Amino acid sequence: MEHTDSKEKNNPQEILRSVMKLCAGCDVCRTLMEEDCAFFPELYRLWDQEKEQKVSITAAQLRHMTDLCTLCGICPCPKIPIQVMKAKSLFVDTEGLPLATRLLTSVPRMAKLAGSFPRLTRVLQSSKATAPLLRKALKLHPERKLPVIPAHNFFHWAEHRGLTARKEGSRNVTYFAGCTAGYLFPEVGRSVVEVLERNGVAVHVPPQQCCGMPHLAEGDRDTTLELAQANLDELLAAVQAGDELISSCPTCGYYLKVLLKERAHYSEAYKKIEGAKEAATASPPSGQGIDKLKALKRYDPKNIYCDDGYFASLDPLSRINLAEHLSDAGEYLARLHDAGQLDARFSAISKRVVYYAPCHQREQKIGSPYLDLLGLIPGLTIEPVGNGMDCCGMGGNFGFKASFHDKSLDLGRPLMEKIRSRNPEAIVTDCLSCRLQFGHTLPYPVYHPIEMLAMAYADN
Ligand code: SF4
Ligand code: SF4
Image (tube, rainbow, N blue to C red; front, side):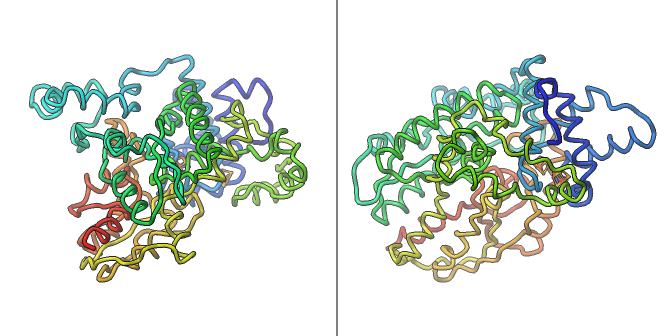
């Protein structure tokens, strides 16, 4: 940001005004994000209106603008959505968090309810009398398909399999399943374990909390920081014991590897490490916006090189440590393959599928490891679909909301059209939030790539 003083730091309107000024001065996202994001078009609309027609931007409009950022991460400057979330959390400090938001963000709580009272949950979800009331109470769109929460989640299964107790092996991995594989699609979590075990990996599933992304996106700062601290403690204890960390969820991975460590390299603690100061100041933040700012001479390293972000209250070295030890499951398997240690005896799967690399996987800058891995399955024809700016539009919980449902479908339409034009037998994507949007919009079955690998192992 151009300038941050204490007034700005604690005033959501000032923060958003500062974001608007920066992005209006830079202007890259006016055209770049025109179709793929709901936030930037609104930012430029309000800005232009104020400048050209002298219509002042209201506090309500600024507040509404924060609800349009889904934290997809495809815009060039990671600090912008984080600043937006910071402003949102300050609004929430005074407004409080609606009950519907609290319930919607707590997948573990919903899953526990479904597990404890399966019949009651089914009735509530499907009865013509109660389902609309439930949707209204949770502010869900009436036409949005809702996932069926299975009675037995992945964590029950892992406990039953003895995976919650760590066993020393020749290769040890601690698996962070996240809420979607943990509670909504346990078959994905099971596939991760099966594929890893097939390759001689001892898998450990420790106690874990939601990564915190849904809470961050809703402006619930206290819960976000509490969850982050709990996961940092548990996962770094596993690192200490000698485990590698993996995640199969691109959103958890993006959050834990990219967002959580944002600006940690500019912390005093990191700079004190010998040689780190130079490293931290020698590598300027990336993004087309920064280049443009430099050209506009608004780029001030003093204000950029400091750990003043959303997660600054958490130990920066722990945030860096976690990011350095966590791999996407596909990345981990690709490393095994490169080292000649992956069991590549796959059975044939005769299918023509499209593979979509989701936003949060792309933003981890790890390439598309699953494309190569899936290419090892005989008979499987894989066509990559979508470019670097395509997004399914679901935005985690945002697509469920009555207020965002239509926008969510609009944002995802270009990608859906590309997939329809291929008419595949199935869609393969690592993001389970995209899976929900594809399941809502398209007639094709959807798989996580690791499910395809598990299927190809199953018959031999
Ligand atoms: S994170 Fe996504 S939704 Fe938010 S401003 Fe960036 S592109 Fe838009
Ligand atoms: S490139 Fe960065 S500074 Fe420029 S408009 Fe986009 S988010 Fe804003």
